[in-house]
Length: 283
View 1 (tube, one colour):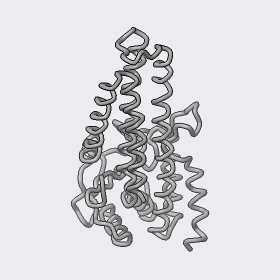
View 2 (cartoon, rainbow, N blue to C red; view 1 turned 90 degrees about the horizontal axis):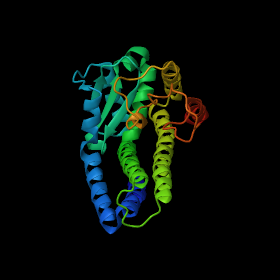
View 3 (tube, rainbow, N blue to C red; view 1 turned 90 degrees about the vertical axis):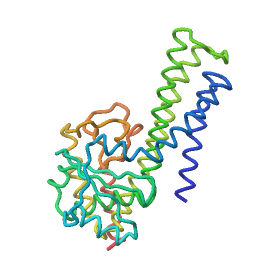
View 4 (cartoon, rainbow, N blue to C red; view 1 turned 135 degrees about the horizontal axis):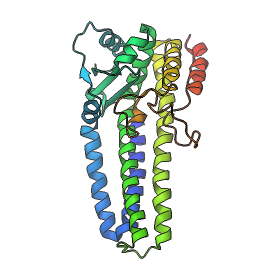
């Protein structure tokens, strides 16, 4: 089922991307956009995990006695997953993410701040959340969605520039229409990306609660991380393109005028409330 959802998302974003190419450059533009989409899919599938780990200066934890490694190993045994690579990020802002294209090529990364702030039950909840993402192929879906959304925004900016300054327009599209498309299409791509991301966070929270049999651990961790983020602290080198990967959005302390429309994550209050509903069922 998860593979079907991945294919659907890829198809939807590819069609949107190719449509922009056709509007901008006719048949040739459509072909070029399709080839670019294929190249982006290939890169996102095979290399995005290495890129993001390097970006955040993550280093592998090789000591099997390290608490993060030990907790991860215990949880993968419960979940029936292969042992992922475990990394630590040298940053004192508490957060974590998972990456990797499948179960056999996965990684969990936590910041030093997360390790320093949370107790063992809270760490277990956070790591179980990331393992749930891996189990359901969420990281691959989210990464591809982010790559496409960024590429669509880039091409849309080119369309807007061309419409304003009278560039090449093989389809004879009115400049005003091109400007409107340049505004609306990236919005559509972003809304698709954010909607997928929010749903996946709820699913990963539930998966973590069932894996640990202890929703309270994740509830407590989410509350601590959200309170810290609201003070405006951000991870070094944090980018909007990778914000959806973290258990708490690194930019959640910034105010937004668009409410929930462009949230990469559900509100922490909603996440904690859903976990509360699960307590009676699990216990």
